[in-house]
Length: 347
Image 1 (cartoon, rainbow, N blue to C red):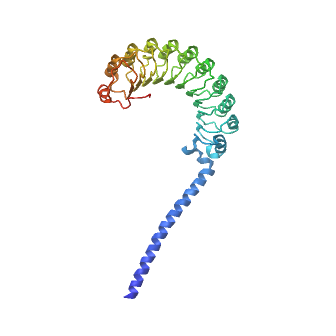
Image 2: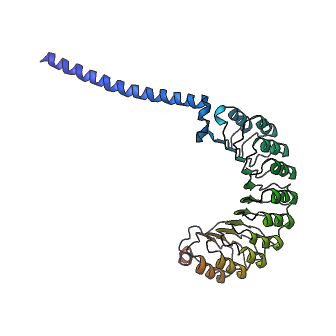
Image 3: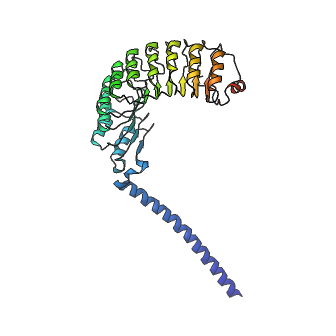
């Protein structure tokens, strides 16, 4: 009897050992395979086409310039398509100049937003190293001038998306270059480019008729002379004119001809009235986003017309600060625009 109990105990112990060993081996092998795979990915050039190595994202990182050089020196990044350095720290021209020695022929997108130490020389280096760029963004840079844009159009002829927001040293010369070289442009951001005038913008609007996104936020120097030319943009879907203090009904009536508009920001366009807003409502039937914030010239007439033509599409409508529109609760606005999800864009 005792012998039989001892045998059962040994069998249970041996069963537990086998079960435990299987778990342990499985766990160890999983880690070994993982480490081997990582080592393989790091060393094998043939694996550089994996999507994980097609994007180098160094956003907001310290020593981003040195990190970029170190990463792009590795074989696995030889086919990188996108380099994001937005708000990266310590990025200077010297780092970008190093790119000239690297195989970046597949790079299509580079983001230098807020890299404020970069100058025209850095732009030249990037554009020489990445001739197949389609998207170039250099928001909030006070050092780049028209010369930088000249390097861009000279070295990169496939650009379709361009963000020059906050590049306060650019003049109409840059817009002239863009108009001549990038007729297929689809995305253009000129926010706070304070030295631009109607003459330069008009060149763009007449030459780049494929633009789908146009941001002229806080560009208060433009007038109806150029705003009327926006009607050339038959593919336009997103238009930001926040702070367009010189926009009148005459200009907006022309803009209303852009029938594919989905998003329109008219915040603080103080000279606009019901006349033009009604035209927008009647013609832009795909409108989903509309801000009329702070416009005292619009009344309930505009709201009623918008409800008639856009009630099934509008998801964002800001009429705060429109003192001649009757104040309504969210429930009341939803009766007019049942799909509204956002009632306030600006605070």
